[in-house]
Image (cartoon, rainbow, N blue to C red; front, top):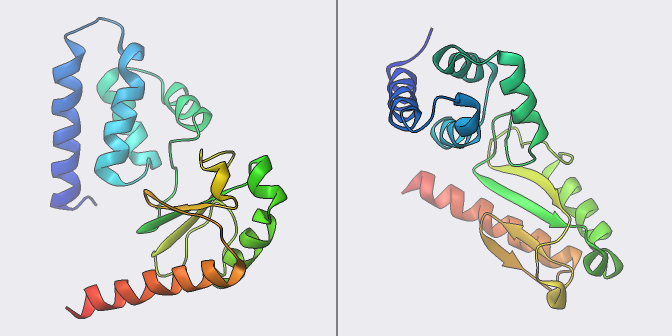
Length: 170
């Protein structure tokens, strides 16, 4: 059973599809834009949302699933409040990104592509974050942290946890 908030999001998605559908008679041409909007609204693309898009756009659900799973950007599971991306590109890897990754996995108790039980963090890998001079680097949400050690990344994660506790208390 959908909540009224979910119904509002579906209504907003339907309006978005209606607004852009008049520009072409080929719904596949704007499917990626619709998937982006849906992910922004719901936080990720679950099966129910993709099925709804299939009905609205008259596109087979299997095609929508194929597009959503092909592109790395789309998330099929709920994501944490904070997204941690560990750069595993050459410069970062040579300077210890593997150790940073292991420290983060141990600290959070999750693997790549997973989300912590409290919903605070999701862990991802990146091939390059474009900050090779600061290697090894990690991006948390939209902020880059460079010249990391296992101790520094543990302290950074601890800071995010403390900040989250304060925002819940305040």
